[in-house]
Length: 297
Image 1 (cartoon, helix red, strand yellow):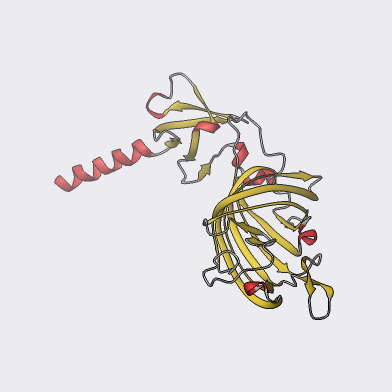
Image 2 (spheres, rainbow, N blue to C red):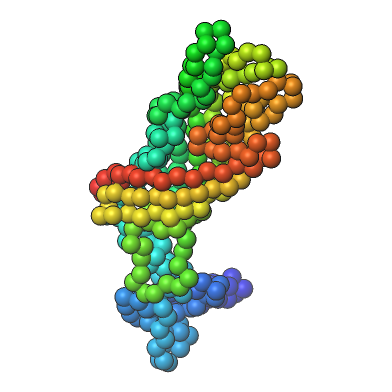
């Protein structure tokens, strides 16, 4: 008899849940409901325990998901963050720091969007692939002639950062990014490089000579910028950054008593400028690029 009552109780409990939908709200509330209509922007339902009562409506922006009686799950999110809205847009772009060749190097970048508002960017710079930089014009007392000595820097640097794109202060129904790669952003970045260059040394003022110096530099920066996309094909990126930086340049850390003839490029590491031995560095640039074709599903 006891088993019989338990069986009846189990059948009763199962029957109370049969046909029941569950609406999960963003505030944590779970509504036992019977969904009767799905609109473009709202869901209409009746309370499961009062199906002859009033019909309620709830904006989809306030719903996380609905679990239907048959186990099917339907998830919701704000339009701005819905990846399906951007299925026809390019998620990848290649860029070049437009003015970098005038500064003695060439920098390439690749950007990939992970989801609305999030992405990453990596960079590779070739030091020496650009305009030749004059280090100094020196006068040789022996030959009694002036000689131009160039910096002749050769090397590379690499960096990478995670991009956080700015979200709007409010979201209207049906709104979306004009392009998933467009907008203001903040990007923490790690940057490191190595190169060799000429260094003119003039100890005690008796002679002038050029010697090779190997320089290692790096930094942890916070970049802020804004990116514009035109026609899902072309982009412009304007940015600047500030953070921690270091290098091993003797021009910045001169404890040997030697006097260096030229300090024109002290702390100038192409993509990263360091403030001598202050530990502060900054960067800036103007990039242009092309968007790669979106993946066809």
